[in-house]
Length: 260
Image 1 (cartoon, helix red, strand yellow):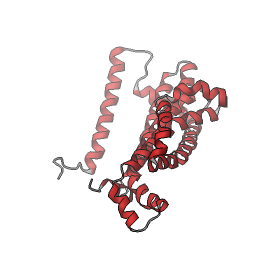
Image 2 (cartoon, rainbow, N blue to C red):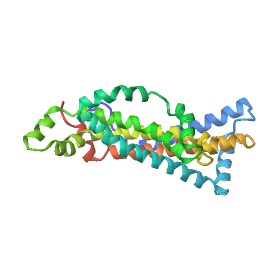
Image 3 (tube, rainbow, N blue to C red):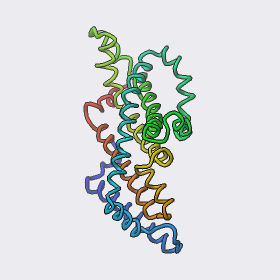
Image 4 (cartoon, rainbow, N blue to C red):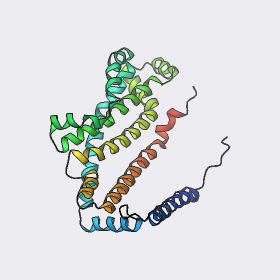
C-alpha cells in the first residue's frame, strides 16, 4: 500500500493553476523591479499573442510545425519500431549494429544542420530529416530494451502453446514490451518537438521556430518572441499529456504488472 494518498481531482487541477499564477506574478514583479525595457511583461506578451491571432498567421505557423513533426515522427516510428524489435529479438544482429548506433546516437541533430542543408537544401525536407534523426534513435533503443527485458517465462509459455517465432514476437513479446516502447515514443516526441524549433530557425521560413527568430530580427519584438515560446511549450505539454494518456490504457499497462 502506498504511504501517500492519491491526490483528488480538485487537487490535481488546483495546484498546477496555483503554480502557474505564482509564476505569472513573479514574472510581472521581476519586470517591474528590474525596470527592463527589453523583456516584456505578461500583459505585453498576452497583447502580442492576440496580435498574432488577429493577423491570421499563427494558425498557419502552428499547422506547419505540427505537420513537420507528424511526418518526421511518423517516419521514425514506422522505421524505428520494426528495426528495434528485430535487434532486440536477434541479439547477434544487435551486436553488429550497436557500435554504429552508439556512435551516431549521441550526435545532436542540431550538428546535422549543415549536412541536412547540403543534402536537402533549405526547406521542409531538411527540417523533417533533422526531426526524424531526433526521434529515431530513442525509439530504436526503447524497442531493443523493451524486447530484451521481457521475462523468459513469457517466451517459454508461448513456445509451450506451440507459437511460431513470428507469433511469439507479435502476440507475447511485443505486448509485453509495449509499455517501455510507449515511454520511448513519448521521449522521442519530446525530442522531436525540441529539434523542430531549432530546425525551423535555420532551415525553413514558417512555423513556430521561425516565428521566434523572425520576431527577434524584425523590430526586436520580444513580446512576440515570448508569446511564441509559450505556445511551443503549451503544445509540447499537450502532446506529452496525450502520450501519458496512452500509458494509462489497461491493455498497454499489463506489462508493468508482471512479477519479475
